[in-house]
Image 1 (tube, rainbow, N blue to C red):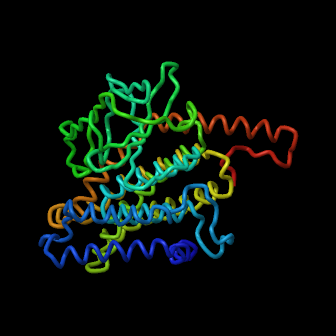
Image 2 (image 1 turned 60 degrees about the vertical axis):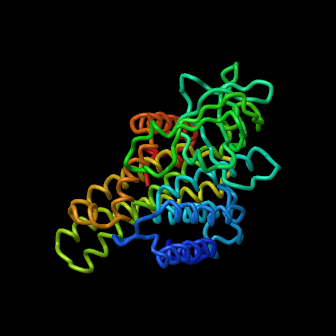
Image 3 (image 1 turned 180 degrees about the vertical axis):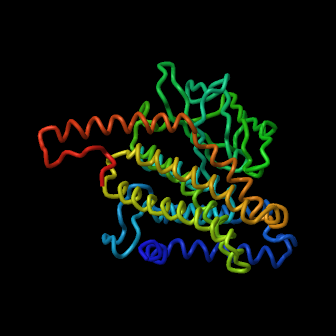
Length: 378
């Protein structure tokens, strides 16, 4: 009941759904969605993305509290943001990838006190480690940035680079200028194939610095934003699971019900953890909540993998071969969740857990009534 009420009390999401559904309906009428069910054209992707960008100023930044001032009246703002991202992901993960990056870039600029215009489409490109790293001298950059999704589309890129002291810095680059070469040839993935992910080379391109050294990494919003990616994963996984509900209702059997029970449990637990973490972020916006968000991302990845495997076992090959939306979402999600860092994330969760347990033991050392046997005690 709680989850349903929160979704019903998100008028922004309802407006976005109406806009997107109208665009899809209009596209079908002119024949761009071809016969085999919900095949997404590049034109429709771009039209939907532009319509979503028009809502940018209405979508809350993470950690912005509760607009209504009453938790009983509406969802926390961070959850509203995640609901929008999850819905977009349910339509198409490529659009979700672009839009999440755009929103994250705007939130980063907001947190760093950037007061100039943020019109147009933005992206945050923060991958490092290329052998030709970004160099910034006298207002211009040279070097190469890899893993730049939407490279041919965005108006402005928000780029990280390391200065001569090894500190992380942030740059704004207008992408419609000379000296920029975009290479899509390295992107061979079948999943997320339409994401326009490229390696971008810059040669003496005008750029401007924003924020203090290390501000991008040190701000608490770094982790608040990281949870937005997990909301995209979750939205796609929940939509794949809905295909199993539909199949079980159309032609029920015990095996479908068993598989549905497995993924229903995982999704419900994950859904409630999103609510919990959103509440943490909005009630304690000064904290990064790194451990909780790392655990959320790990939980969503595990759930998404379970859904992909279990729905496939329950429904067989048919939807992978005959349903364009299902097939595309399954292939895209398998690639998108690799934005997780696997064993490294688990290691960090373990280290943070140990630190928390040690802190908890020290805090309660003088109080027998406050002492817990361990940090997971109910």
